[in-house]
Image (tube, rainbow, N blue to C red):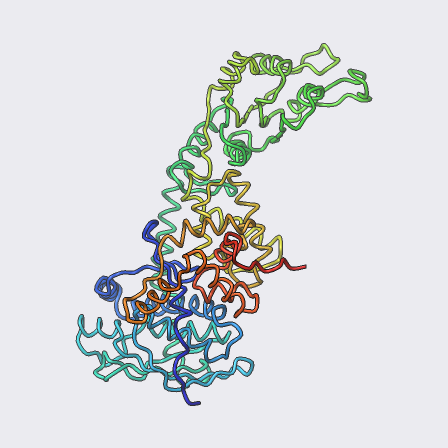
Length: 564
């Protein structure tokens, strides 16, 4: 087919955001990094010198492939509804926008339903070719490995089948430019010579395997292996976990402190699992969820006829936990009468059922938890001082999630795997921007809030796609405000030009205020997009949540009706 000029690149430029306040650069929802070309070339050279040409080529090819796949995912969204060629050209245009090389299309034949693909492009000013020549001189073999990986990854993700690009000419070999050709892998007679570079590196796999063995031995020596249901890597989390490990070796009563939703019961279960009582029962009870007149019978048991409705003798939680661990959550809500009996149990190691005068010996490890300040409750007369001092022998403060930012990525990964199975969905994960939002959120509900938010994201995200900001944050205005805080602190850099000056002069002479201009642009964008907020947002170079927030904020802007 004859190649036309590229589509206008303004829709891609509008996706770029520089946020100097929080040190991030964004391409749509993908976080980017702007770095010196010389630094990247130095890293490439060190990799080649360290592991050899073949292994370095494999690593760089796979790195480019992964980048190409991400760009293809963006391409499918940014030009949805346009021709296949316009959609595919997002890749070459992004390659140029990212400063990789000037990409000149020569031929493109693309038929996704039939699985047919043929692409031929020229690369001019390829940074990888220039780096190869600068470090090693002219090379008889093509050297743009990352670029080839990107082209192959992009086309493969776009076509949903493996498209192998090869560099048939390379500037590093003395050619005037680099020329690449891409076809389905089975269309290449010598594909077997090139496909190994897209596979995992056996040398690196061995190195990783050795590293895992060393890590395992080290963890065995220091006994730092986390239990399966505990996830965290932050210093605050490790400090709390280390205290749990040390307490597990004894029978000391433990008091877990922290806000609602920080995972106090998980820590209690971990303490039980690490202790010598792990084969015994673990019994948990929420003191705040029980009526006051039933708490004593729930804790200590009752004999038949002890109170109205007691038609049979029953064991209490202490007896059920005999030989194991009893976890009393929200201990601060325990009434004073029950506090007195609990103190006696801790001192004597025996209980009496309601309506019985016989004592029963018990062997129970008590773990309590609260989100209230027990010291203040003692001063207010709501909690017994002697019980407080008995429980406060070994306090462990579990930090809130906002103080454990480093724990958010592994928590997200672990929770998503569970929700994928629960809801029978396979997704690609959360976008870079969504992860940035998660890290910036204050988390008043802590881990429980994170869990609920991620489950919502899994349900709303399209099958096989990414979980985006709008899937996680249900209140669009709040998401818009966060988007302003996280992403729009930076702005698209506009070059000085006569056109820009003329446009500014027309605005100043119009007599419109900035608010009126914004409302006019919002209305016109929505009109041209026929009410499609996602399309209108792309036209304006902002996200959909940002547009929704502005439409509600601007009194002169039209707000699309809610769907019925």
